[in-house]
Amino acid sequence: MRAVSFSAAVVLLAAAIGVAGQQQTLAQAPPRRPAAPAPKSTAPQKPAPAQKAAPAPAKEAVVPFRVGETLTYDVAWSTFLVAGSATSRVVEKRPAGNSSAYYLVAEGRPLPLIARLYALYYKMDSLMDSYTSLSHRTSLYKEEGSRKRMATTTFDRAAKRGQFTVQTDAPIEFQIPVDVQDGLATLYWLRSRNLKPGDHLTVPVSDEGILYKANFDVGAPEQIKVPLGTITAWNLKITVLDSTNQPVGKNIAAWISTDPRRLPVRLQADLPVGNFGLTLRSAQ
Image (cartoon, rainbow, N blue to C red; front, side, top):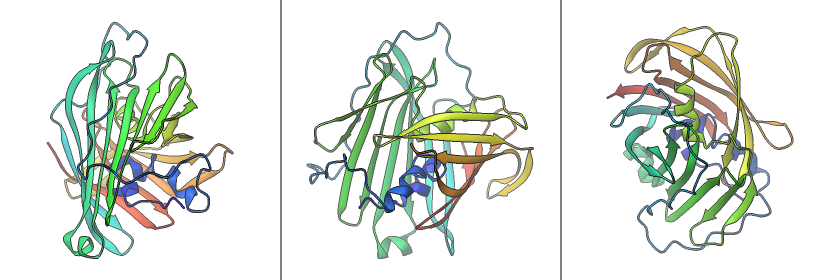
């Protein structure tokens, strides 16, 4: 059985999109998913090269973030007001196929008190094209107690094929829509949108070889109080649907600031393992 991991909340938008889809696998694991062998190394592995993509548009997309941006969040879990911390960084811009891409990294750890009960660490990354804002590839490395696991997904949009690999297992191929995203890239894509009340956005999201549909309904701006301060933000109600069009997760929402930086100031989700919330502590 594939359990919902704490990465759902700790690795940023995983609480709202990527791992929100994972929660349904508490009841049933995908039959085509082979068991992962023991990793050869305990250190996070270097991401696999991006798949060659179709020619990029002539002009890079306008984005509200820059290389070097670091967002730090407090993570609340059930009765713990602060259970851990998470960061999301725009590490660099690098070549990707015949284009260029932002290398995005989100990491999370619990507080020492919780870590003494169960050691946890999560790292999610994404290579998001600087022209199309679509993901080339994504990976999730996690440590849960003594268990360590690395999984990578790459997208070949020209062939409409995705490839999911766990550790050194043989890749699993699956069909993808041309506009598919991973969870982390979706967060940064949302930040680049010009939102207004009443907007409805739909994004196909791939999570470990499984496709979900994430729907975003934009409400009116609200005053949100977070550790960084009181910020005016768009309220986005999020619904994640599985392949049978059934919702997964409850009470999933995100608040994105209305200022030019479009900061994700708060994220929340109700999952079988508890209620998660991320609140922005600092933005550098």
